Amino acid sequence: MARAVAQQMGDIWRQQVIISNRPGASGNIGAEAVARAAPDGYTLLMGTTALSSSPAVYPKLGYDLMRDLAPVSLVVKMTNVLVVHPSLPARSVKELLALARARPGALDSASAGVGSSNHLALVLFNMMSGANIAHIPYKGAAPAVTDVTGGHVAMTFAPIAAVVSSIKAGKLRALAVTAGARSPIFPELPTIGEAGVPGYDASGWNALLAPKATPRGIVLKVNGALLESLTAPRVKDILAGSGAEAAGNSPEELARFLQSEVAKWGKVVKAAGINSQ
Image 1 (cartoon, rainbow, N blue to C red):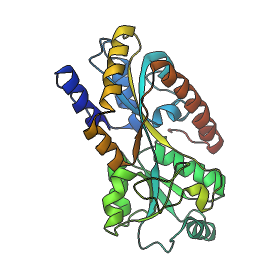
Image 2 (cartoon, rainbow, N blue to C red; image 1 turned 90 degrees about the vertical axis):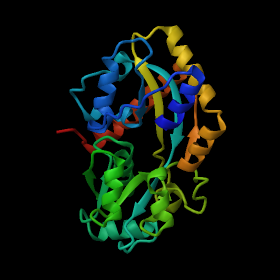
Image 3 (cartoon, rainbow, N blue to C red; image 1 turned 60 degrees about the vertical axis):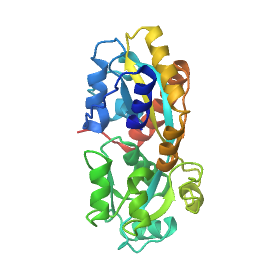
């Protein structure tokens, strides 16, 4: 998502926008780096769903989401897809639940890290279904998917873009999507809510933020470039292929959205007893 919009925003500004990957701690290393950056509009954060769970997961964060970062715009909303290794004898969510209940704690699920969207998807799945599937955190979605594809971990709730080729090649078996609606990429796949866990919805998202003291005029300039970028044909094509839906909005709307997400996932984190220790 970051590369797609960065290239387009660079074209609009006639200035290269460089992507700097800062993995680790479910994105908090990158978020803290931006929170401490000069508030001049030159350093931005492409944040993920993990931003909304981190305040509850990590009690000693080096930044405060609402105090230290300025909302610019929501970028996309997306769904993860529940995939299992083909060797697992489960071809549906109901069969997976039956297997999990027959072998409590024996199944495991990989994620991009504690508090990541795929971890929260698992937590919500366990809470709503009564399953007891263990969590295996990785430093990013890519290594998590790699180990599931290799048969080292039973399953994961992965971003569609990270597993679409493996699903089509038969290296992974897709069971359902995590959002409240089906994905246009795999319209035949049911939602988890349809497939056996009524009311389940664990949609993911990306949002653009800046250091808190960034002047309002700069925030609006970045917001405008982002919204324009999301309408570009090549960006639309990338989003469609990634199972993402453009969701640009105003800084105020993003601020309200982040507050609701922090409240939602904070409750899930606390109920499940998740922490970074």
